[in-house]
Picture 1 (cartoon, rainbow, N blue to C red):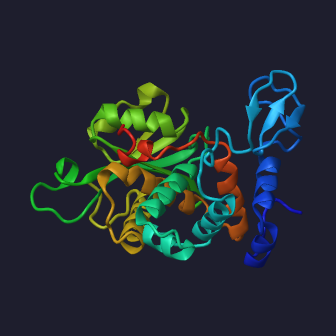
Picture 2 (cartoon, rainbow, N blue to C red):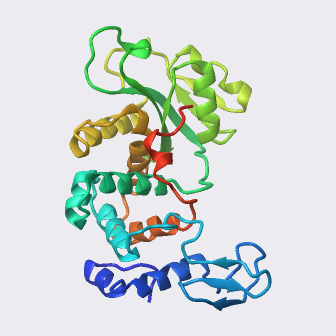
Length: 306
């Protein structure tokens, strides 16, 4: 058996029982056999209730302990079906669409599952971008009267960070930020871009301190001729993002939960050239085993802003 199913028929054959799902998770979590999460011992007694008891420190644990699946009341088969469905929809999935596809019954359950899966799409300890990076900000939100530009009211400011890969955008990172001040921009950039990288921005003064943080800084002058695409990669990512939010989510995204949608967009954009939907499913399950549990109460209020 390979790492992941290639077709829907293989998926159905591989994961036809709850035990087959648990066996798959066991191989992902402990590819070389059981390891106690407390003392790293290799031996355990297999207990009732699908628990493993370490022969050295007596810790009782399960395949799903400390992962996305911890304490779930739904079957692993249903979780796997949700993950297969989500990764096989190239343009994304709404909570309503997921609920209808899986027969979840409750919109709230589907909404919660989608946000948990979006949290899963952020790989723990992922590398920062490096090389030549284009950075710009964009506003997300409906048309509002009043001031335009970086001081606009009633919209959410998103920092777009795009790594250059030849003539196209390679990996991207997106993050909601409080404002376009130097403090907000520098904090977000340091979290997402490795020192030593060449950063290309417009001449906004909030970027003036980047060299002090170990970056090369190429300022693209806004005084160039009208029509010049000065930051083509960042602008392309911004255009894709706005079309995706309008097309998949109909633009109905609350600011408090926007970062979760940005996580999904990033996951999909960074893997847009993948020919295997099964591999995307594999990566999502793999990351579900690597993240901490995501209780519902941690989702409702959204993540803290930078």
